[in-house]
Length: 83
Image (cartoon, rainbow, N blue to C red):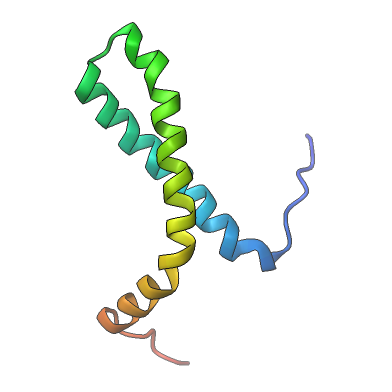
């Protein structure tokens, strides 16, 4: 089995929005492109560009708004009980 070297924990605040933005923009751009073009050969040619553009916007946006989102969630969700 191949051992995969992991990133140090200090990179988690960047890796989490990176992975989240990749997955979310992929799903949303697939749905949007399919709705616009249908399941045609044009879809396969168009979707990668649509995904790339949406990811270029989504990743930096996530980095900027994540602190605000964390504060909003903290206002809406009870803190876990301390032990």
